[in-house]
Length: 334
Length: 278
Image 1 (spheres, rainbow over the protein chains, first blue to last red):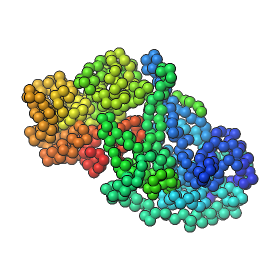
Image 2: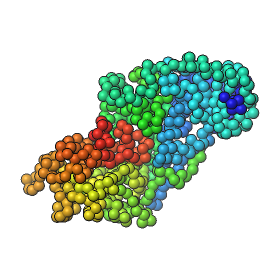
Image 3: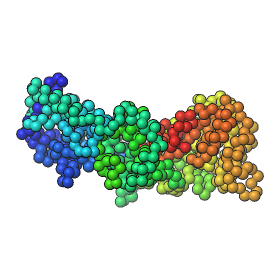
Image 4: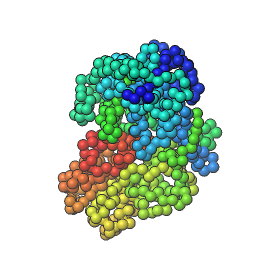
């Protein structure tokens, strides 16, 4: 640990830091919505921020890949005229847990693979990410140790760890350093504070143990053997195909593309919206042939996308262990 | 929220103009399209484009003409959905939005020098027509060419006038069968698999290219393997739902593959273990 990359923010300066940060550019952070629900929303003061929170209802992917975004504007009044566009806004996301950072890293790989998605990449470039460490498990659904997403592993500009009286902050990028400079609330971390961080990480190794009795390296192989397993039928029987699991998943990115005309019927836009492989029409072609008609097939597809198919393509699991999918299921699939 | 124009967006539309249309059957219509500025589509046989009907949406459509026609390309479209239904209302002179071409087409360089057994079921003739006409335009680069077509009824036959010309050519062996035929039909009756035993071929130098409805693949491929055509010399073109054409939206995923970028043309030896493929 190089000390120059670590700074300290005293807790009594937290509110000042958050309000200063919110003046630099749009700032979003986890906010309590009651009944142990949390949501990333725009904030301007420290007291709005839920520093301890369980995975938010929607992951912060909603800022990089909004539920709905315009891809193209067109006008049909004098021939066909169209212009591809991206909607973006400089945004700082504060308080991103390591599972959600892992999710953003997955999306980065997908959308920067050629042919590139410049809508996503423009927004990625306009986003500053400030991580926040989980010192302990957030809830009983988490399996972050299984996929090695319980410790910071890059993908952020700044990374906050709550040390009780103060936050210790890892400065990972120049963009992060610029925030530290602009905010003026930070002081350099001392040896004792660095030691305290190292011991917290040591303690975390005791707390976070692989939650599922399998060697994670064997997961793709296990999936290869289970394509025809009965477990998918069992899941299919309980699934109600609501699509909640894919909406709340930090690594689900499937979308639909739709057109919409203005009321004057001259101009309009082509936009994309989140879609879900769990809903019936997802793989249906013209003429009504559905390539994944059964819920069992669709659930199997979702699990294989997380643990098998993308491993070959992107060399990483597309599960971040956040537990959001399990927690969002109305008919507990586990 | 700021809005910026992305000049290099992969959602950018190329403008084209419908030059000519032809109603092929009550359900299928043929469109001849020229891109703006006289630009060539520059596709490979077997590739597809995304057709835009602004205000309605986009749909993936196979190009059915050979890239040897550089001034225009053709799309043969069955009206089955909202986009294709709207497209059927287009006439000569109307503008049309195009993205693409997308996907992997038939591997022409690999096919050159070999015999071809082309098996088309129903609408499968549409993407195959781009290959067949390309082969005719470059006929001496290929060995023997067998073309087998299966349709439900005589009224479902597409490109009937061209098929008649194929029958007269000395450099192609062409046969057609109908599932159900009127008494005056003089040709074969029965499923397309019934045509295969009558084809004499040298399996080691033959590439079989099969395009048709999902149910057809299994039966035809079984027959091809029985004729000792090597697995790696069987090509298929698969159909899936598509929204982006760029391996992102997820609709066309077939296990490890995206039909839009890894296909739609696949080598059978690459997908025979892929249970969702066929």
